[in-house]
Length: 80
Image (cartoon, rainbow, N blue to C red; front, side, top):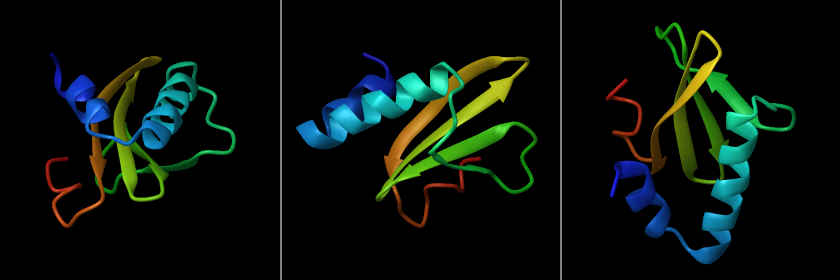
């Protein structure tokens, strides 16, 4: 099981549903209505925020790759 699936399993049913909706929007590149922000000093890494959840993804040459799904903490963005 990959890291993304494990992160989704740890969420509550409501958060899981919201996260899956966000992932579908991100994959279809429908960013309208999302709290989307490019990470500082990163060329093509973005984050979407929903409450205290963060979905960090890479968008390069039209290909979207989900890097992580985490709750906000002091270490959330240090890996990128």
